[in-house]
Every structure is written in structure tokens, then in C-alpha cells.
Figure 1 (tube, rainbow, N blue to C red):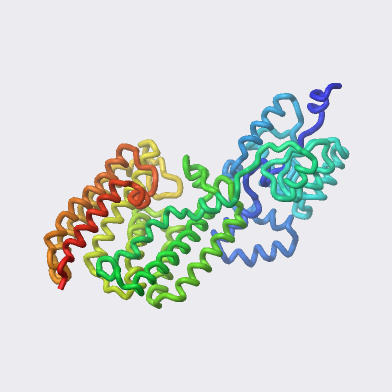
Figure 2: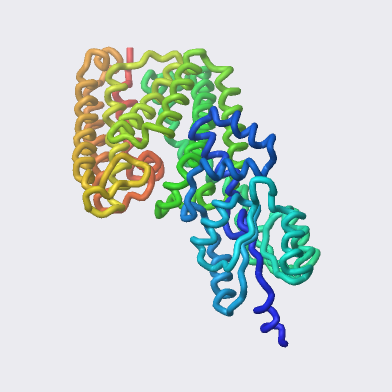
Length: 480
């Protein structure tokens, strides 16, 4: 019997968590259960006291995960399909709960049998090794795995195939010169991607009250704005990570969001939670040295953005009004950090301006779906037929923001603050140009990112804002 024929008669046993799937079903399930109801923490602790096998069973029963919801490793699936085509027996052997294991096996459609944990036995590490030796004999099977728990099984297998290994599995692979199928992606890059530093550009709004009040040369105000900027940015990044955890299913069904670190499995749930906690601590540390009013605004922002993450983003229109409000809260935070008096006109302009941008964000999402009635955007309160209405509302908001700006320029406040208020009139067409251009790009399907981030990256928008800053400076010349 040649080597190829012998291999066909040797079963290939495949691990699930981290191997077939680029995720850990237990950790992800626990995160979903707790995010859905934080009070379930006490139940989770009770299940843990009964053993890991019991924990896996209870979490699987409550997480509501479907087999199609998991991120499968394409390289592994292709390898298994090839092996199955040769007539080889494939066995899914996993420490996951029965419902998870059977669901994944049925979805993959390549396994002839499944071995899994029960409510009493956690089928991992040496228990898995003993079970496979009992079934096939020592050296009577090949094994595909990825972690420290798989090392004892590697030792008992005829051949090991290592997939996206952790440190222990990689050390074993190098020592035994074992085959490696998928190296995985580095966690550091995934961590940086998960906190979305490019979104920090939104937080420059914190400096708007200081600039408009002409306090940019006051060192104390500048320092407070910088501290407030990072406090907001750290908190926002923590919320982004939590949001990604809560929205894993919808993200995996989205054509681009499926590549996010948590959704794709590039970053583990424990790492995501650790990053979120560290960012939260950093934000609170900076907030402690800022005025008390800023802490109140940041606290309100934390509550509002959490409500948006778990509830409001799924509500029709409430989501865009909330987004517009959250942008405006950044301006309020800048006022609180520097002690600057806020203008009613500035807040009104901000609400309409950012409502237009929030609506264009939804407009782009709706444009990705066809026009059939009832075709709802996953995780949102909109259906495809809302497309035109959202666009009309967004353009109307753009014109409303320019109107509020025009009234502000003509107001008594401006007459008192600027000696040349007429020099600010060109701001109105500049604002309209910026917003209408964004809407036209969205209509042409040329806008593929958050519109606020787009403004911060687009050179035409940056030039427009620079021209606006020059007009404000010109209007302030000779200020009494």
C-alpha cells in the first residue's frame, strides 16, 4: 500500500474552535449572553462552578448562534473538501457543546461523524487525546488543531496539521516540522484596526468652541482641549469594540464589515474585552483632571452611545437623530472643557449639519440593497424602499444647516463678536458645497466610508474648511 492510499484510510480529525472556525464559540457565546443581559453574569459564574462542560452547554443553549453565523477558515474548508473528494473519512472532534458541533458539521457538509463535549465531559486536551486513541488507536489518525490544548493530541496523531497556531502550538510545530495550513493574522494589527483610530478625527469638534471664541492662544484652553480629545477618543474606541461584539452576526452578513477584526476572527473576544477595558480606564484617568462639567458631558455621551449600540441604532430615524446629537455632544464637551459659553446658533447649525451626514451614512447602506419592499437592512430599522426618502431628508437638512448659519451671521451675537461680519457670508455656500458634494458622491456610489471621516481625508473638503477658517479670521480682524 503506497503512502497516498494509506492516507485515504487514515481518518482526519479536525478541531473546531480556532481551527475550522476563526473564533472561540464559548467566549463569543458568553459575550453575547452578557451583552444581551448583564445580570446573566451571576448565572455564568454558577455554571462555571459546575465545570466548563456545563458552562458550554448552557451558553450554547442561550446564545442563539446559528452555524452560518460563525467565521469559517476558507483554507481549512477547501482542504477538507479536497480530502473528502478522495474518499477520506473526516471527523469533527471538538470541545464545543453538542448543539454547536452538530450545527457546524451540518453546515460544513464534509464530516462523516462528530465527537463533542457533553454536559459532564469537556472534550479537550488529554480527554480528546484519549477519546481519539480509543476510537482509532495511537497513531491511527491525523489531527488538525491550533492551540495549547491540541498539543497532547498532536503527540498521539500519525500526522499533525497546525492551523493559525498560538505560541504553544507554534513551538510544537517548529520542533516537529509539522505542516502549517493557515498562519492567521497578527493580533497587534487587528487590535489597532479594532479601535478605529481614523474615527478619532470626529473628535476635533471638541476644539470648535475654543476656536470660535478666539481662545486658541490661551494655553490652559489648548491643554484642556487636547486632554478632552483623547478622553473622548479612548471612550469612543472602547464603545466601538463593544459595538463590534454586540453586532457580530450582522457584521458577518455585511459585505465589508465582515472583515472587521472581531467579526472575521482575527482578534479574540478576550483580547477585545481587554482592549475595551484599558481604553475605558485611560479615558476616565484623563477625565479626572478636567473640569467637572466635562465629566458630566462625557458620562452622558457614554450612556447615549451605549443606548445607541444596543437599542437605538435599530430604530427607524431615531438612529440618525441620535448620531447627530452625539456629534453635537462633542461640541458641548469642548465648551465644558474650556469654560466657553455655547451659542444657540452653533448648536442648531451642528444638529442640522450632522443630521445630513448621518442620513447620508444610512443612504449609502440602503444603496447596497435592492428596491424590493420588505428587504430590511440587517440590524437597522430601514427597508430598501426608504432609499429615496432618506436622501430627500438628508439634502433638506443640508440646506437647513446653511439657513441657520445665514441667520447666525446676521444675528446680534455676530455683530458684537466680529467687526467684519459680512466677511463670513461666503461660509453659507461653502457649507452647501461640502454637503451637496458628499450627497452627489453617495448618489454616484463613490462614498464608501463614514462621511465625517471622508471629510477629514478629502482634500477638497479640507480646502473648503481652510477657506472657512480664513473667513472667520478675516471677520475677526480688528475685534474690539
